[in-house]
Picture 1: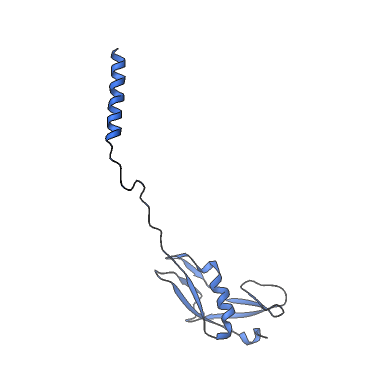
Picture 2 (picture 1 turned 45 degrees about the vertical axis):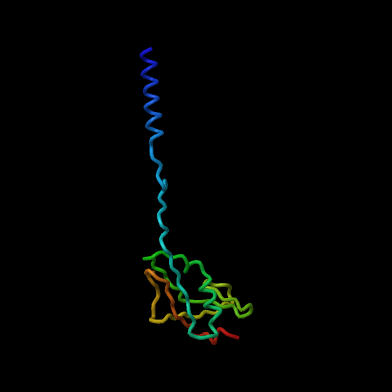
Length: 129
C-alpha cells in the first residue's frame, strides 16, 4: 500500500508541476534573416543595353551577403549570326569584347548597400552589325 501511495503522490506532484508551468508568448525565437544586396550594372553607351540586361539578369550578382567578394566578368562573347551575347564562349564564330568598369575595378566587396557599377565594352562597334 505504501508503494502505491508513493507512486500516486509522485504522479500528483508531477501533474501539479506540469499544469502550473507558464506558457511563453514566443516559444521559438525567430532569428532575423541577414539582409542581402545586389550588384546593378549600368551601361555608359546606350547601344550596350543588351549586355547590361544580361549582367543584371544573372543570379551571380543578386542576394549577396555583406562581406562577399565578387569577381566581375572581363570578357563578353558575341556570335554575329545569331546576335547572341554571353559571358562564356558560345562557339567557334564568337567575337570577344573586353569589359572595362569605372575605376578600373576587377572585383567588388559587398558592403551594407546595393552596388551600382558603370561599364563599357571596348571594341563594341566591332561586335555590332
